[in-house]
Length: 279
View 1: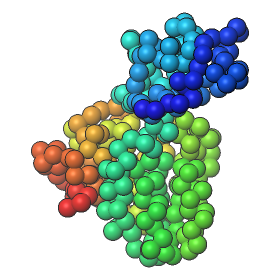
View 2 (view 1 turned 30 degrees about the horizontal axis):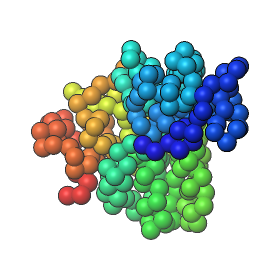
View 3 (view 1 turned 180 degrees about the vertical axis):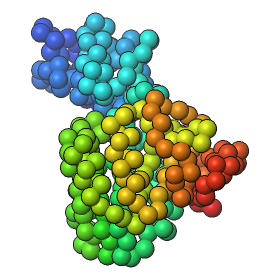
């Protein structure tokens, strides 16, 4: 991955600052932002690789990574750092918006077939549901509720689409609103359909790493007449810390063509309708 700004470092300066070859001093905060951008783009790396790349000592790069890990941007493990999810860690939204992009777009195009003029919808704060936003205009008029700030921004510009933004506690790692206030806002509505995604699906249950996300997703599912689960194939056969709902809580599961036949058959064995995007 190209990283021109990082490759221009000449070496460490006092006080944790670095100097670029053009003579500009860069603060630790600026360096950490560049570091975060690099790891989010690459997916994973090691401290040994990053230290010379950023022109700082191994000790300094570890401090930077500790700071980013404390903020939830990346996850440190023995021997490296990753932006990729685990059973207890959901990836930063910046990483998720770049990950499996082609598959998410295919799922979204397929999901748009289920949207008809005059419907009321809810989209959760997943990047998979967000991919549905550009496909909503042809079905206007619509009314859409969401807690995902990027979706609010995009939908606010679309004439003929009414928008309800679910407020609450803003979370910068998800770029969305969460918490009790958000749940109560969701519960005040009744909608025709909800489109959600989640981190993992296994053994007839959907899972997610974070309890506060689970609470919002459950509220969204409860107020919708029809429930759609949008899932790229990398999430199949995985588990996460918190059980969200049984698979049969959904009316339709939409997966991308990367899901193998055995995985699709396993989903169908739980009495749920499965649709493969692109077929």
